[in-house]
Figure 1 (spheres, one colour):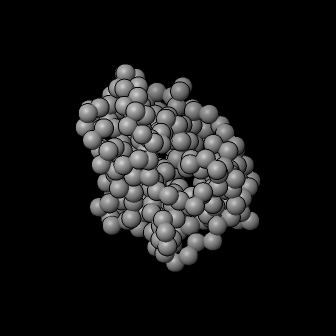
Figure 2 (tube, rainbow, N blue to C red):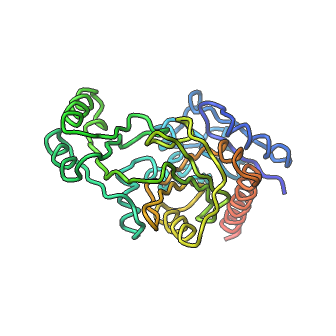
Length: 295
C-alpha cells in the first residue's frame, strides 16, 4: 500500500537521499518540508501537512527539530521520532538521567552550573575526564581534560561563550575503551545493523574520520540496546555503546541518527530496513486514524 510521508529537513544529505530514493522506488508519495521556509500556525496546520500518513524528522538543528515535531503532535500527524523522544535525546543531561533511571549502565556523570563547582566535579573524577556540551553532535566541543590547568582554561572559555547552554557543565568519567565504540541503528529497540568505529584519537565518531566495520552484537549488547531505546521512548535511534572491560556502557542515544557510514560498513540494506519500519509506522497511524473516525 502506498503511503504519504513528509520529510522535515534543512539540508538534504546523503542519508536523506538514501531514504528518499528507497521511498520513491517503492511508489510512496513524499513531501519534502524545508523547515527554513515553512511557517507553523498554532491554530491549524498548513496544506503542507494535509493527508500525510507520517512525518520523519531529519532536521539538523535541535531547536528546529523540537519545535517542528511539537507542531506535528499538535496537528495530529504521527512523527518519527516523537517530540518526547527528541527532547530526551537532544539533551545529554536528560539522556543520561533517562538511562540511569532505566538501570542502563552509563558513564558516571555530574552536572554543575558554575566554573567553581564544575572544577570540583572534574577533580572528583580525576584526570583524564571528559567535558561535553549538553547539546551537540559529531563530537564537536567535547574535551578530554588531562590536568587542572587544562580544566581551568576550558571552563573559562566555556563560561565566556555567552549561550546559557555553555554554562551547564556536563562532566563525565573517561571510559578507557579499546580504541573504538559501537553504533547500533535500531527501530524500537530492534537492531537493524551495528558497526564499530575505530580511531587512534579518543573521539571515535565517523564524522571525525573513524574507520568503520560491521560489528556482531552479543546477547548483552542486544539487551542494552532494547533497554536504552525503551528508556528514551523508542523510535528510529542510534544507540552508542562502549566496551568497558568485560561489559558495555551506553553513553548516548541519538534521535536524528545518520546511517550512511553504517550502510557502507555492513551487508544489510540499511535504508531498505528503515523504510520497512516507516511503512509499518505509517500503516499503524492510518489504522488508528480510521478507528478514531469510526468511533
